[in-house]
Amino acid sequence: MTDLAKFVPIESVAKHFMVSISTARAWVRQGHIPPDTYLKIGNTYRFDLQKVVDALTNRQHLKQKPIVVSEKEGKEPQQLELDFGNPDEDI
Image (cartoon, rainbow, N blue to C red; front, top):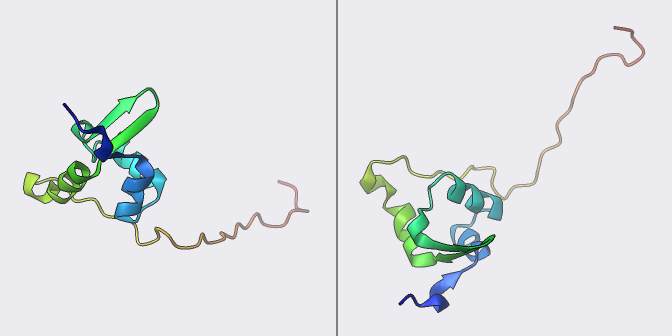
């Protein structure tokens, strides 16, 4: 029987790895977090944090590409400047 008390929400997984919740969700979609590390009931996921840690840190032993968190993760967004030319000029 599984001890349900050790299962945590995705927010705890994201906090543990210091990534956004969106990144943790992407890892699930992309298969970086294997299905045997979490339970899914309806739209609710609960993760066995120790199994997730083991799965993500042992990826190199499986000759799989390690997960790299973008250096921009957690930084303030940057404003992009768009140049549409002269707005009074006809095309």
